[in-house]
Amino acid sequence: MPAANPRIMTTVDEELAQWLRRRSEAEGRSVSLVVREILAKQFAEDEERFWAKEGEERLKTFDRKTAVSHEDAWS
Image (tube, rainbow, N blue to C red; front, side, top):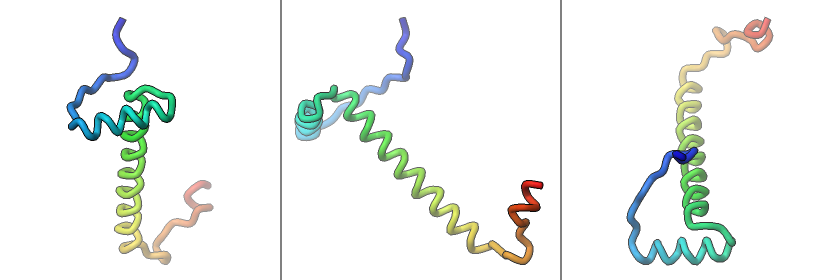
């Protein structure tokens, strides 16, 4: 039966492998779950930075005089 989620293999140095093992043991979870959580957190942070930058760029061209009001947009 195929895995429900895609699998990714990677190679890490011994120091990082030991750190991951210690962390997983301390948290009572598998190394795989620890790595997944770290990657998900980094992904969320990257997305937040991207959208913050996009918002800043949009604010540079925003003109309240020509903007559509909330009420007009949803009516």
